[in-house]
Length: 182
Ligand SMILES: [Zn+2]
Ligand SMILES: [Zn+2]
Image (cartoon, rainbow, N blue to C red; front, side):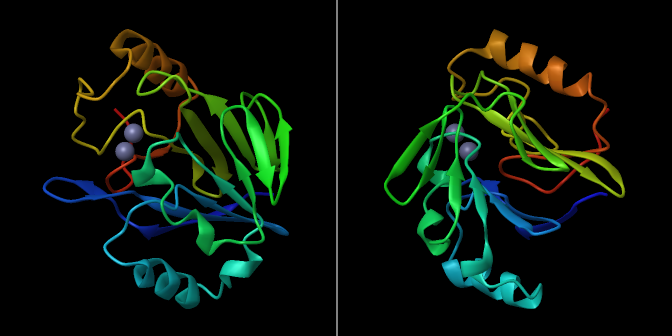
């Protein structure tokens, strides 16, 4: 069993900023990663429609970290559970749990990858094309090598090494298109 991953919107960070937003389908589980800033929310809704997914059928949303550029459009998915580094939120229930190693679905796990902030998590997805990592450890295929907003650059580099050791086939960065590492 593997999951299917589609990019809903490819992010950027120049004079404007948008998050890379991802849809993952794994059996009964439908996940959106980082429903943050986009040029217009119709970008997300239109792409979901193309893919045959109703926003209300999204079961889980993962926040890579707490910055608004990665969370702003979360309310589009009113039926979902929301995951961050230390809890799952649904309606008025705040369930504490550590994200590291957490299984969202059979083919989707979370990995603690701090550095950009102390709360960063990576979503690991087993797809038919290999392991895909949705992560803010890179902004895009071009880096930057030194994250100008990193809370702790040394910790970020340690997290990059930890992630690359899993030999992902593809990395979906915070503000760019998927790329093959190396
Ligand atoms: Zn950030
Ligand atoms: Zn960002």
